[in-house]
Length: 406
Ligand code: ASP
Ligand code: MG
Image (cartoon, rainbow, N blue to C red; front, side):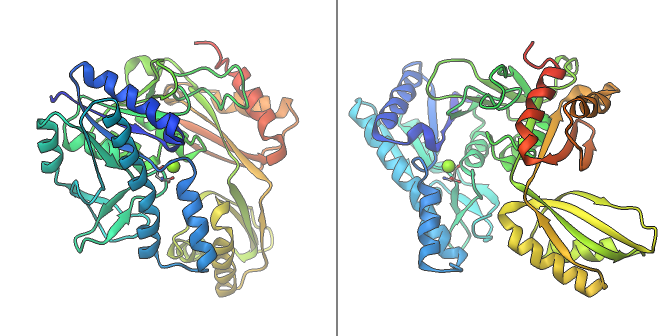
C-alpha cells in the first residue's frame, strides 16, 4: 500500500476565500504528518448550477459538448485558488485539470464514464513532494474533448484516483459530519452512523440521501475501496462506508430516507394483454428516463391503469414518452402527480429479520398516512405517500425503529 491519501472537498467546503484557506490549513496538517496528498475539489458553492442557468439563458437546448466546456470551468477555478492558498502557507502544491492528469473518459458528454487514468503525472509530482490538486467531475475523451462525469461527479474522481493510486484512504469532506439515521433537519434526534455498507449506501443514495454520488459508491464497492465521509468544518470521525461486516447485520434498520423529487405518472385504460408493459417501458427507456416504482391495478374490464414514479426533473420528457406509449398501445389519458414523496427504510439486517415491513406500515397507519405505492428490495422498503405528510412520516418511522439509539 502507498502512503497516499485522496481527499475530496465539496462545493460548500470551498464556497468562499475564507473556507478555501481553512481547507488549505487542513490539508497542510496532513502533509505535516508525512502523508502524500492528492486533493480533489468541486466547484465553489453553487457555481455549477449558476453556469447551467447561464447556458439556459443563452439557448433552449445547448449542445452537450459546450455544456461540458462550460461547467468544467467551475472546478478549474477551485483547484487554482486552493493551490494559491496552500502556497501562501508556505507549502508546495500544483493544480491540474482532469485531462492534464490523464483521466480518460468515453464521449458521452455530461454523463461520461471513466475508461482509465494514466496517473504518471500525479506520481511524478508526488515524488517531488508536492500536494497534487485535481479538478473533480471532469476528464477528456480520446479526441481530447472535455467531458464531465454527471452531477456530483467529483466524488467519482476521488474514488477512481484512490483506486489507481492504491491510496490508503479516500476521504470525502462535506458540510455534514457523515451519514445519519435520517436528515437531521427533519429529525433532530438523528444519529451519525459509524459504519454503513456499500449496499446500504447505494440504497440510501438512490432513495434520497444526497451525500454521495451513486456512481462513486458503485465504483468503491466494485474495487472494495473504503470511503470516509466527514465534515470539513470539524475534526469528528465521520462515517466509514465499506464492505458489509458481521457487526452491521445486527442492526435491522440503519436509516430512513426521504425523496421528494419524484412524481407519479399514471396511464389509464390500458388494454390488459401481454406486451403492453414491455412496450411502454421500452419507449420510456429510449428517452433515457429511469423509472423507479411501478404498480399496475387489477383489471376487471380488460382494461387497467398503470402508475410509475420517475424523477420530477425530467417530468416533461417522461410525460411526452408516456403519452406516446399510450397512444401507440391504444390506452387512455396520462396524468402526473407531483405531490408525492417516497419514504424508505434501509438496513442490511433486514435480510435476516421478518416483520419489518409490517412495522413500517403499522406506524404509517397509526399516523393516518395512506400508502399509495410500495416497493421492497432485500435491504429496503419504500412507500409513496402524500408529500405534505412526508416529514411526519420520517419522524414517526425513525421513532418506531428507535434509530436515535445506537
Ligand atoms: N460541481 C459539480 C456539481 O455540482 C461536481 C460536484 O460537485 O461533485 O455537480
Ligand atoms: Mg457541487
